[in-house]
Length: 355
Image (cartoon, rainbow, N blue to C red):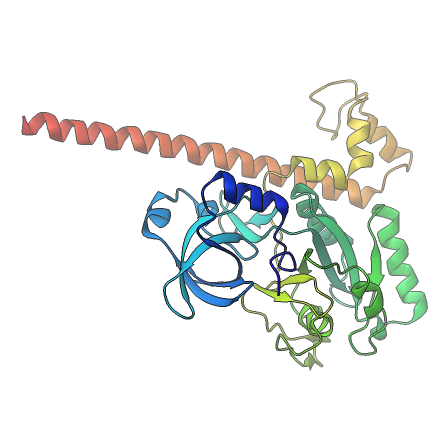
């Protein structure tokens, strides 16, 4: 396997030369377990850990490797290595960390395509699709909607679902598939390009791991049986992992996400809800909240039936989440700054007493 097949680009090679990393071997993080990493190179896999100086210099989670990252390593045993540097990321998919208002969780890095998987039975929800689209757009990742388990509905039900999506979402490919009959799998495989990286996004039990196995050409991930009581597959993926596909692409599987919390996704919201956002420019007031103001172009379009009411409500909800997250971040920074000043004052008082 070549570096190019792993996704190594000319830009990464140029960065290596400009930052004196040519003496190290570039590799890609394919899994992470408690700050220990499995790194895949063009010569094989290594169990790797961070160099001490890289670990101690880290100021946030962003300074540690994540699945999908390119890193510079040096081997010190047959299958052991040290990570000396992390290459720049060209994309980063993230969400609000579950239960932590002012923190983010990295889902994957260096992604080209986001494969948003929803089952057409119990999991289907256009609001959730818009959330996934927003985090993809914010990360500048191309989204594709994959509707799984179409064998569980008839043609008229599937058409109703497709119409519901197309009424609110434009310009995003929609691929209906069945992991039982393999219908639609060829259309997904046609997306795969050598050296490109794809990330599976979706809830538990929608068939992500089964799809991955089909694309990889082997049983790469364990899959769960269908629960007869709730008519969905059991969630089996417990961690993120990067897999090389049979067709030459690279795919990252993710544990199912029950929550897709919104962070600083201004550009993502603008792309997902471009019809609504374009109307805001013609509102009477520049600070219009689009809730009850006179002269609001968004409300006028809503009353005229020109925009979908459910989409408008979802947009407003995500705007509130975005604003809340940003204010929480600012408050946290303020507290951290105050704590820093307090610590310095205490240290200075200790020094004054000593002398």
